[in-house]
Image (cartoon, rainbow, N blue to C red):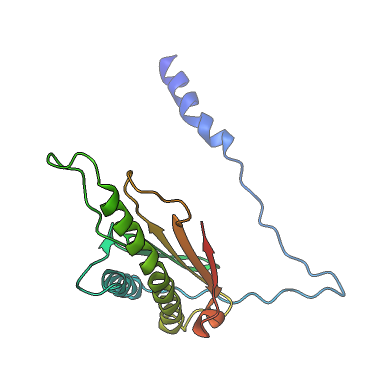
Length: 188
């Protein structure tokens, strides 16, 4: 009895998986079928090269005197029938930390950090626009309508006043628009 019960329990998942019938697309007379652009795969090596280039551009954003801190490596992915999405997280200023001799960040230091962040935001936007143009040129094999998205999340210390400061800058455009430098920018 037990082997029969075990066999029946093993077969239960098979009954719950209903095969879907392949649907045939029929064009009714008088309707046009939408032309679908064939999706082209970008190699992982190309994405890796792009990620490394973005890391270098972001790290050198403000020059060598006052570096920008990358909070992790830039990551890029290709989404089928959509395009390329690249993300990164940076601190526009290497932030001072709380330590035994300084249990609290002094107001003057916090004000200097905020001012430096505000001054670097336009540099970040310009670099991101250039990065979008670079992506469009690097991936010319993609259809012109495929999307390129670049997202940079901004890191802030818990002690910072982030009023009026964006937490994330997103740029998005079709590949053809990005090549011309026409991108949509969203800050939130």
